[in-house]
Length: 183
Image (cartoon, rainbow, N blue to C red; front, side, top):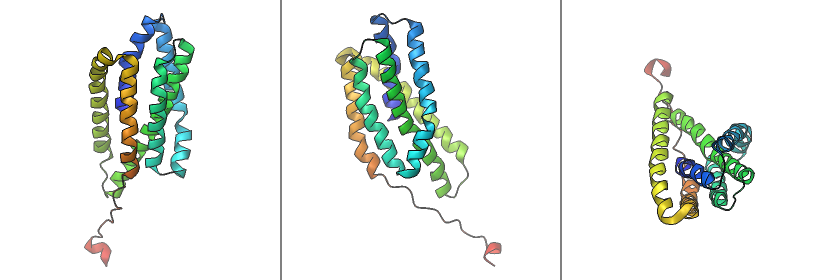
């Protein structure tokens, strides 16, 4: 979901900004500031993840992203777009950070130690989401316009929230004791 949502703005927003007269330098600055704030939001996301279930934190991120994405079409000023993209990226942190932490928990609960393989699959799926969405976004924007594409992504995020909230963690695996440990 996170790759899907961000995968829409990264190919479309720079084109829209250029049409509105925003320089490539300012566009780069918008994404740089947003990425920096994304990184700085990690402690806040971590604290909230310690207080709420991971599902709830991800759902909060999805709701926030669904709410902020359409605002990208509402503004024309680079400063307001920067604030909005920053809000989208903070929403992304609420979706991605707990998900990657939960991936490690799943490996632990399975009684395995294949963290690198699990994170490799995670990265591949995220990359496929970004690539697939980039192609889909440009086609959708041609038919629906920038706002229409953003509204479609927001709708998908909102529809996914009940699925996220209803997901149950896998049961905790109890490692079997070897015969030598049993005695």
